[in-house]
Structure formats: structure tokens, C-alpha cells
Image (tube, rainbow, N blue to C red; front, side, top):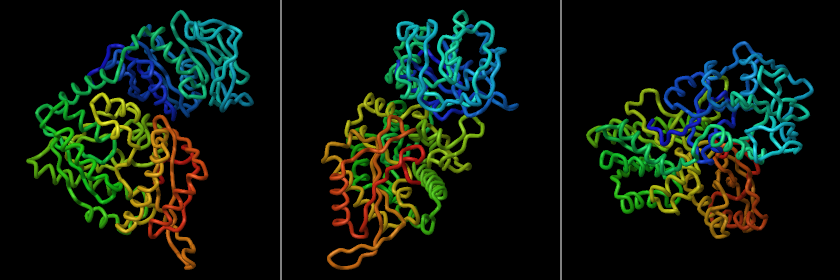
Length: 520
């Protein structure tokens, strides 16, 4: 990759579920950073030549024989290092300290640390004698510091809550500064990146855009690219970015698989043909997808079928266009995190995203994924940078598999039509209430459950519609949107009255975690 700036931070990932939040906070400070799994960190270092290193948290224990380690030579480079939670533990052990089980001193959740000595890490932010809220999540803890380290903050369960070697610019902390529950965490990370590491803080999405354009040109050369449009923001931004890089070498293919929201097809086709003048092929393959989904109820099988069939359609369209060398997709970082084990360790696959785990191994075209390092809100910023209309950029996320994963159980044309109508009513009411931009994602789900109802003094036996609405920053975690009862009552009344086939409406109050945002 062509780096968008010479000021870069390398984040070494030990498998924490919130490692990506470290990257978000650093980027929010205007400093470019990349994440590399611990077992590929040395290679990433050579490529990036970073000004500093951050060691992430992780689920392992350093007392395990096969626990992950940072490359030992990182500690001899003379660069600043910030070690978080598991990162603190492995740094302490690798430098001659001692780590042990906390036993009664485990800490999970909100905690308070006392600042007992000054440090360059929080100079001008915290002072000796102050108490500050942080977020802990640890079972083990450092029991003996390596030579040269001193305690600068402590808590009841972590006597070395922050321990530093100021001479070597090594800083370690037991808590997680990257999560919002550590109020000053973002400021600590920004201070490390800019004041300790000397990064300028001038990285922008414009710089990322320029770097990615160079990357795309280098990767594609004179080749032809097909970009799959799903109707969502991600694929749209990817398409416009790639078109800016290689122009007429790109052809967009909109696969109308019959699983789109109401009015989706018309909007996508109009935007790309009229607003951006990008070559677009509209492929109507509704029958192909729905026939292939007939009788399929397992969500992973749905995703994998849709992913494989997408590729088959793209291969066929590429042949019609005289051949294509690359398939472009709007894959985002959260897609990768949820689909594969980023560290190569024991983390589990939550679900196969259609454009990550759902792709067949025999795919002929090579992938171009210019958004793979970005979070959803960063993609929106990039979209604005590229000139996409605000109405399109601000749209709620929509999954590539479309309505297929919002219909638990078998997917049929009839059930898609029912869901389309209910979903359109729900989103219309959200817009009418002025709530659309306050919500990360909202959608209806058609459940494989039928219930008895009464309408016009007659018995009904129809489907249940579930409503989902969440707030989030990056899609990795999400809270339920707290609609007023009157709003939900109004939506439920309209859906039951206007959509034949639904006689009951429920609201999903599950956050992420433990649930995912989509139902399948």
C-alpha cells in the first residue's frame, strides 16, 4: 500500500475484540495507523516504518506456553511503545518482569485509578493526586515490573495500572483507553501518537483517498475491473473511488437479485448512470437467486450461496464484457473482523459476510477492496470527499445478501414482497419523525413465526414482523434506539393495517453484543 503519510503508528493485534477501536482513536487524532496481527507485525513494521508502536489487549494469558508475543526486537528499536492490558503483560514478561493471576484482584468494567507520579504520557492532562475513571478487563496482572519501570498510576485491582519507563519511552496500562468508558482514553492515545511519537496529526481522508488511488492504479495496471454494487454506501463509495483511479477500465455491475429494499434498484441505477456517468450493467437475476434459496433455512448456507452466486454472475458478465481481471467490493474492516480470525489465533467466526467468508475459493478474478481498512463512518467521510450526494452517503447500512438475512427461515418472493412493504413503512415513519440521522441502522425483519390475530371480527393467522433500530459509531458495538411507545404503536398499527400477511409487530431490544445487528 502507498502510505498516505510518513507519520504512521503500528498497532500489534493480540486478538482483542476492541483492537479496531485503538485504530479509530488514533485516526481521530489525525494520525494514520494500521493494525497487524502479532505474527505478521515484523513484516508490517518493515513496510510501514512507523514512528511508534501500540500493543493491543487480547484474550490470552502470558502464562500459557503458546501465548502470543510481540517481536522481541521491537523493544530494541528506540521507538516509543504503548502497551495496553495484555500488551502490558507481555511487554513486562518479555522485558524480565513477572505476571500472575489476579485471583481476588480481577477487574472487569468501570474502575478508578489514582495518579501517583507524573508521566510524559499524560502531562497537561492528568496531575498527581487525581482520580480518574477507566475501563478494566483483566484476569492476570503484572506483579513485578521490569528494570527501569516505575508506577505512575494504580487501582485497587491493578497496582501497576500505568507503569512507564520514561527514558526508553515505554508506556504500559492495565485499562483500555480505546473504549468510550475511559473518558480521557482518546486524549491519552492522541498524546502518545503526537507528543510522544512526534506524529504531525495532519492525516486526513483526503490523504487516504490519494493513497488509495495510487494503490488501485498500481494493483490494476491496464486490467479491467468489475465492481459489484449492492445498493449500500460501501460499494457505492468503492465504485466512485475506483472510477476516479482508473476511469473507463471500471464497469459496475448491479445484481438485482430480488432481495433489495423498495425503490433500491431505481435509486442505484439513476445515481450511477446519471450522476457519475460510470458504466453500469443492470443484471436482473431475481429468479436465479430465489430458486437457489428455495428450501434453504440455515443463515450461513444463505450467505455462502449468495456470495458464490454473485461471483458466478460477475464471471458471466465479465465474459460478456470481453473479460475482467479484478472484482471490486466494498469490504470494510468490521466485515473482516467478524468473518475471520484476524490474529490467526482462537477467535471465532461470528458470521460469514458475503464479501469475505462467503466467497468461493475457486473465484477466478482477483479482489480490489479499497475500503478494507476503514470503518463505516470513515467511509461516509470518504464518500463526501468524493462528492457523493449526502442523501446517499448518510443512508443506513444495507447488507450485500439483502433481505435474505432479514427473513429467518426460507426466502420466497412472497415473503420478500411482504417485508419490503413493512420495511418501507418503518423507514418512512422514522424519516417523518426526524429520527433517521440519529439512528445507525433500522430495518424490519419477517419472522418464521405465525400468530393468531383478529381483524374485522375475523380470525387471522399471519406472520410476525420484528423491528430493529440501533445506535453505533462503527458497527462493532451497538445500543438499542429508545423509541417512544407512541412511535412504535403508530408503526405497528400501520404495518398491520397496510401489509397483508402480518398481524403482529415486535421490537428488538437486544444490544450488540450479545446480539449482532442483523438477525442472520
